[in-house]
Each structure stands twice: as C-alpha cells, then as structure tokens.
Length: 172
Image (tube, rainbow, N blue to C red; front, side, top):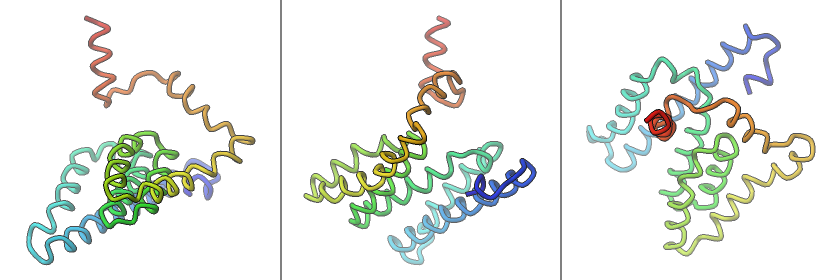
C-alpha cells in the first residue's frame, strides 16, 4: 500500500515505515490476544509478545525497514487460524504469504499434516487455491515468475544460514 500512495522516495519511506509499524502492532496485539486466550490473566500470557518484542528489538537495525514483516503477519495469521480450526482461512493466509514472499511455504507440510489428521484437507486446499488464484490472470500482464531471476541475480543473502554454509563450503 505504501507504494501505491507515493510519488517520491521522500513520501514512500515514511509511508512504508508506518505500514510496517502497523504490521508490528498487529503481530504484538495478536500475540497478546492469543496468550490471554490460552492462559487468561496469568503472567505467562504475555510471554509470546515479550519474546517477540525482545527478538525484534535485537534485530532493530533491519526489523522495521524490511519487507519481510508483511509475510510474517500473514504467516502468524495462518498459524492462528490453523490453531482455531479455521483451515480455509489458514490456507488463504498461507497462500497470500507465499505469494508475497516464498518463505511461508515451509509451513505447508505442517498445515497439510494437521488438516489431514482433522479430515479438513479440502478446506485447506480451497484456501490455498483462493490465495494463489489471482496469479493466473495477473500472469498475462505481469509475469510473476520473474522473481526467480531476480533472486538468482542478487546472489546469496548474508542473513541466510543455508547461504552462509554454502559460501563457507565453496571457500573450503
């Protein structure tokens, strides 16, 4: 949304920061709410939000400046929906997260296993399908698979453990 509203970089940066601050607030609110649902007013109901706050504070240099927070919100939404047995919504949030940035795909096997056990795999697949469906008409005007060539051209990322191990093995 910040990119839709901006005309110059000076307008984009504060709008993007505001967008990420809202996402951060949504994550914290969700963690507080889910903690309270599970443990009521006990002190441990705040542990998920506190743990998230401390780890995000430790990564503050990058945290509110990176695009990854948007798929993180979608991933958390998928996990909460899955925990509440709203499997179609979990699939939808997971699919939109995957379309936004690829890393939420690691949760698909977990979601499939959970829904298989519940016998609600059809609902999950329906949500996943609905989340990915907009790519079909978009692919005629915007080739979404171009993200792969972008990632190949930019090289390895330093914060990736896998990339670091690959780099170290190459130099050994």
